[in-house]
Image 1 (cartoon, rainbow, N blue to C red):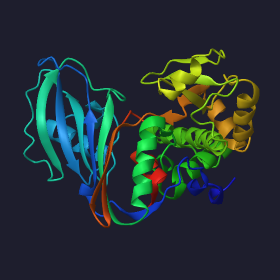
Image 2: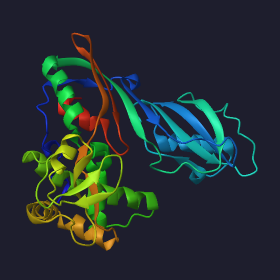
Image 3: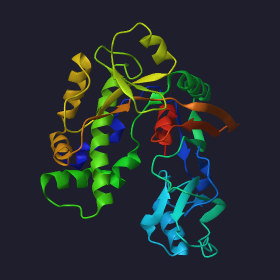
Image 4: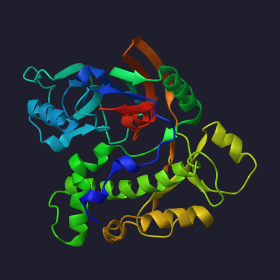
Length: 342
């Protein structure tokens, strides 16, 4: 394996993708609003801040907030990473035991505090209900009617739950580093680097498993031996060939799953287990490295249920998409179902 093998353009698409155009010509072309369902208590040692950031990454914003508060950056919490090249609204928390609310007047202009309130707990990773997106696509060409029809199909059938390219780093650098680490060529010193490389390697195997299911048009269908996950949850169950499975799949109440590689036996059986094993064996260095680092077999849904999808033609070359995705899903993956945007 070498860096020439890391080609995300080879992943199979579920829809015909009839458009071309430009995306993120400016930060305002990518708007994302984090949705939370946590009732804040109004008191406690944690100050929660709803922030609108423009053209800034989440870790940098967390560091700027911690600087104003005079606390280590590790005491700043957030639910998830938001794209740098965007206008993103998200929540942060700062642990301030016995301290007054900080003065945030020295924050850079990229950071705007929308509201703040005290709470008795730190904001943890993954503690969001969904993300709402508004994407503006410019200089578009192709079949607009076909693209709108695809959006209607997506509302009914969902989209493949690929990990987006940003998971793998610039020029797939996270995958290259993971490979070098697993070969013993270097050892990452920081915990967050190790986590990044492990996630990239695991995601790469998962994407290939999903791509194989998309190619055979079974990514949103039952195959004997499948393992299913409940919509909106992490619980999963093995295929029991019950007659109601087809209706639950059609209604997107459950989804087929793919392996997140690690120690232990695959949960899938029969042809599905063989498919997953056949994809994983293509990346023996990644499989061995993930197992050596102690990761255990887990599952991830092969499909994303997309909420409140809208398609608006602004002029003869400009489109606006709006939709809602669950945590861990990538807006760029939905965009890839509609066309190629650069």
